[in-house]
Length: 179
Image 1 (cartoon, rainbow, N blue to C red):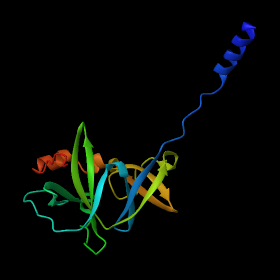
Image 2 (image 1 turned 90 degrees about the vertical axis):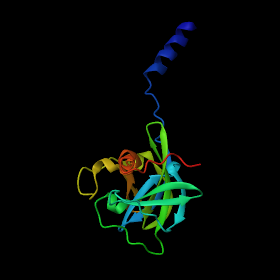
Image 3 (image 1 turned 180 degrees about the vertical axis):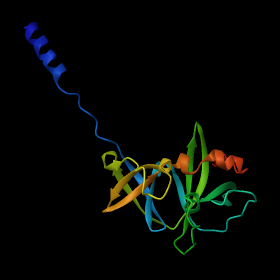
């Protein structure tokens, strides 16, 4: 009897291991210059209407300045300018997305100006393709991946690279996490 038990155990070892399905994550989808971009919602603190931004001298062109968010100084980046494009033109749909950007073991709070927020979508890991090496118009290292959502491509951004806190620190705008 124990011989049969061993044989059935050996048979179980030959079966292929089950692979867990890729995790699905929610992404905030927003538009910039008629293109769709996404960031993981785990990094999004809030979305606020566009407001006056206090400029800070001697900062990079993509660094718009800072805002006061409930007593915390939050640097604000124009992502279009960060990509080397023309600055974002402010309209009634323009908003600032407040993000937690993880660098090493520190979290920094930064804002990005976007043309508009369009949706929050769940995207399965299996729907995300690697970043293309050409033809996107932004640095490949800024891209975490590409996903197709409702028939359109969405460029998923690597916030740690797009919003380089090291560059902001050099500009004198190193902002610790706000509460």
